[in-house]
Image (cartoon, rainbow over all chains, first blue to last red; front, side):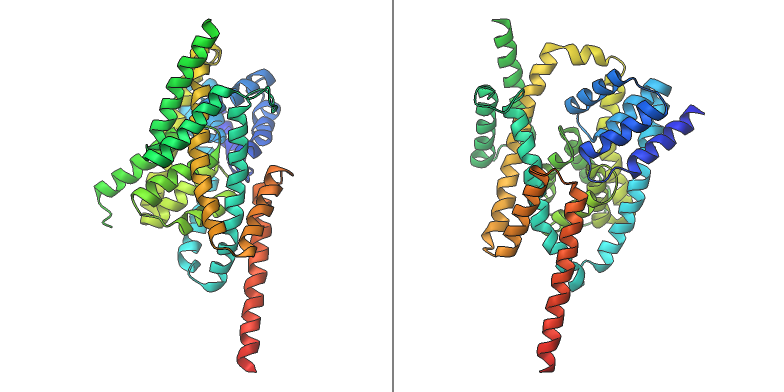
Amino acid sequence: MVILKLFLAFLQVGLFTIGGGYAALPVIQNQVVETYGWLTAAEFTDLITISQMTPGPIGINAATFVGTRIAGLPGAIVATFGCILAPCLIVLTLSMLYKKYSSISYVRGVLSSLHPAVVGLIASACLSIVLQALFPVVVSLSGLDIAAAVLVAAGIFALKRFKVSQITVILAAGALGGLFYSLVERF
Amino acid sequence: MRKDIKFYGKLFSGCLRISAFTFGGGYVIVPLIKKRFVDEYGWVSEEQMLDYIAIGQSSPGPIAVNTSAMMGYGLAGLPGALVAVFATVLPPLVTLSIVSVFYSLVIENAVVRNVLRGMQAGVAAVVLDVVIDLIAAVTKSRRAVPIVLMAAAFIAAAVFKVNVALVILTCAVYGALTVVKARRKERDNGHS
């Protein structure tokens, strides 16, 4: 039963990915390329490229991509469901505990020492997002994408000064960037 | 806050929009959640948001799904969690099932690639904007311990590529020890 195999494979992807994002890649590769041979290594690289281009967690992207190719839409739904089932059950349990105990001073103390660490982790992710945008090929002075730097600066200015909505900033940057890079390629 | 159809509609569309614009990894949801659910709706405090992210990161599975499940549960129990998770899963599910059919066309299309390159800059601006606010909130306290914890976590993740779950676990142990120590001190003072 390929549907059942899809479910079990992505159940493991969901369960064994801790820390999100690229921590999922080796687990997905192990299941999808090595264990079941659903994708070739080249297709797996394509999957990573697509995941970067499309919204959403890479685990869900992989589940939908592999599921669709192996068993159409039902495959996509089953694989996605498998991927989120275990995490959701665990997180719901934690949510219940959180609701019950988060006001207790012990728990409060632990959580409040996590906050600055979480901010540090978010800042680290932010750094790699910004570097990736400004230096698409290599991080060096000549590798700086000036157009991207202008877009980032203009975006921050619009967000801070004029309180433009985030989605507007992302879409406007896409439109302006798309136009600019396409013109540069043309001429 | 009444848990009526309007509430669930707002929760659903909020999570849907956040998920639809989460390009480039789980952390991009942070600025989007902060703007919509903390600043605009006022449903979640910044403290709670950081709690959700800390727990969402340290348990298995996609951070975006975990965080929205926690937020949904916190707002409206199990139905809230289900609505939030469904709304979070829907955009990538729909996008990928369309894209996977003719993905080579999409990957090789120059215009698509250029638009996405521009959007990447937009996402960078959005994330940077909120990260500046979050860092400012920590440094504003002028207390040494949180600032050191923040810097240490940043260096561990950015320079040494330590798994985020491990970073959070270490800080949790540190936090627990601090609480125990503070309790003991309090008790000793009480006896003397």
